[in-house]
Length: 222
Image (cartoon, rainbow, N blue to C red):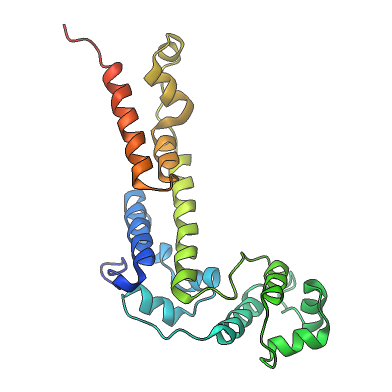
């Protein structure tokens, strides 16, 4: 880690590197503490990836990738430790079995590593604990990327939710297209919506359209 922000991630994990860069830049623009945004414990609970592996990935170092069953056992153990009952106690094997629609013997064998999980087992347990699909099975880099993308979405929503710049009502009422645009969406709202587009090509189209609009409403020079 450098200056509180993650160092460049290994090229082998290009999607993770790109996501880390976007989140770091967005956090910086919003004045957010990078140590909170990239808090290892929070990211571990969100992704299922151990904190030491997350540190290695964020520092651009490769981390040993466990096989499917090892990942399943590792993340199921994390779920049982972090997703507990309202009274703070862990769910029992019987409660997991009942909630996931399997026998206690099946649940016990999966929890103890005596049986390899099927995708049906994983889906049922993920639904029981209320986590997203793939939580128990995704590769470490993919799981961390997904968790950081959810962080990015939250930051973008917070950014869009900030107080919008006021637009004079009389200007909008007079038919000013730029005023109507700002009144309906706001600068931050436009930025947030553009960030949701799937590619730079789509975002370039938005930029081109806004440039045309601004040119069309530019006051005439006297």
